[in-house]
Length: 144
Length: 145
Image 1 (cartoon, one colour):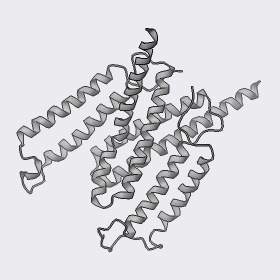
Image 2 (cartoon, rainbow over the protein chains, first blue to last red; image 1 turned 60 degrees about the vertical axis):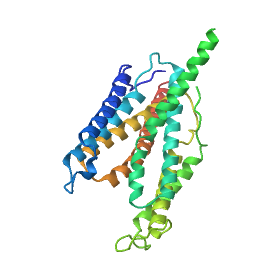
Image 3 (cartoon, helix red, strand yellow; image 1 turned 90 degrees about the vertical axis):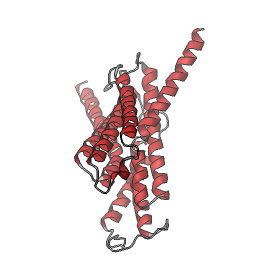
Image 4 (cartoon, chains in turn green, yellow; image 1 turned 120 degrees about the horizontal axis):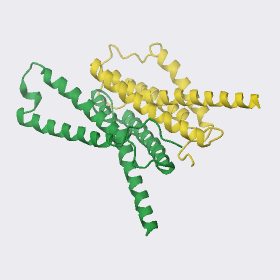
């Protein structure tokens, strides 16, 4: 069985790079506009819109690349772990969403649900990495 | 290789039922007196608008969820593979749509709602379609033999 539709292995580095760039950009902005965008006046700042979009897009692309790049050796076991983790990620995402729907309403709802956009990817990355780590450790133990 | 963490097969029909129940409720929203316009939104957690929103969203999301993750009658390697592929595609499509719609529009509320629906709907459609193709292929092969 082959895992299809995955990015090459080096894409993981590109993904992490996206994150680093995003953090650097945030730090730089903090230096240029020490008070943040909100205090710069009544006129809506066009830079704010652009950087917001840019932020979200960079983060999403980075997370996607990290999550869906090939492992160094792809085998049955890895693809089993990948499916399990993906399923769990979707489960967790929708459970969180349902809880949010019940507990929060009004304008706050949108702000909070916006964070829900990246939960599946983050949960997937953490669980998948953790399982791969466990697998490697047990393999190392066996070969001893 | 086994598929873990799936619901029993009959959850599919339960999910379909939940989803079908939610459609007429949304369509006849106005007739049932849940129209939001002109009403002032109160701050309490259980005003009528929020309860309506809550029930419809819960019905829809849980329904789709059950349809998507119910076991097939026969779970084998092939089905497992189709499921993994479809899930991956669903996530890809979801995020591509999200990025494109973020660039093109400012309507955050609908973007977020889309983001809720797209992965499950796309997953269900692609998975069913692949299984259908798979079954047709198997039938054809049996016909030749």
